[in-house]
Image: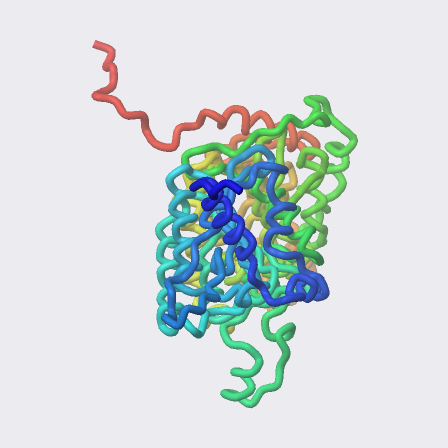
Length: 526
């Protein structure tokens, strides 16, 4: 028998290491499946284009902790990291492996993640994190806590440079929650994912309150509070939703979102276009669902709403118009009459900044009676927090289009994509009412004393006079034409023309410059 060669020895070592990459406890994979959850590698396989995933750091593990000859350090350290493609576009991905040390985060685990984020920054591609972890690795002591800080720091440095998406597919607790929170989007799965700062046991010990993981940090709770952008029922659905979201975003802050041909798009008016003429009631006090408007504007009626359970009085999400990726912000008259409040302004402002970071044009659909009045809103900082929306619009440099569907009153006019917020194109429907306030309130303020005197004098035509004043104010102020005369509305269009006007505007703005072009000087006509 021949002596083993160096190649034989290396192959043997490689095989032994490969066999020990997944030293999870016996039956751990079966337990994961029994909970309705996929394993880390199964998730990656479903997420990435077939055959494109290249694993990085497969054989990394924590430094040796004992000198007694035993070595139970797992290769990979409980997290799978690598790079591959989703719909043909390069994406970095990691998946915490709950079958290995509970997916707990130690120093090597965190260092793998930091290295992956730095790679994504270098090559300019999104990062998708599949979170399923028991939390900080107790054996690492304060080193595990330092790992969370290290990871959070690199994510804050990369914020707005490449999209960062977190899928909570198990438990995410304690310091771990700040990783998805400092990203751009967070997805959760009903029944199997939980996210909270302190678990039920700690809550019980400190406060005496009895609660469960689902009540404290289940998917629905986090969706209502605004921590989760999107909720699905299974791991598979969540991974598909992640793919769908990525299709609307640029890979980085200097690229453009992919433009997909829309086979169904037509430059002729369609039945869906004509339906827009009847969706929004002319009466300003009647409710309707603004999503019906959005779906008739979107290619194939496809609208990807996010944050649907939080601050539902404003709708945000992504759609395409003639293949262009677009982020939409729309007042929702069917919820609190579409009034803006603190949560709605923060929801919309954050979305605008996200679109601006990744070069997604912004569409604003306006039907707002103003800001929600009340002591509670004022004492919660409505002025300070509401100004975030104005600031977000003013700071955005992506193409921005506003369509006023019906009402645009008071301070809400200024903060909902007005021409003065450096908006590019402002359109309005014929029934649009752009004014300080509605006619009844305005007449009471402007002519209240006059009407009161008529009542005191016993006049019999008070109601007739009141109706006459309301009609006069409506004629002079509650229509888009006085605003168009000032140049603050570019065109008054019929509802059924909206989709085609948006398509033309997006084509026009495709080469829009963000800043004045660099030049030594202008060419004065000497």
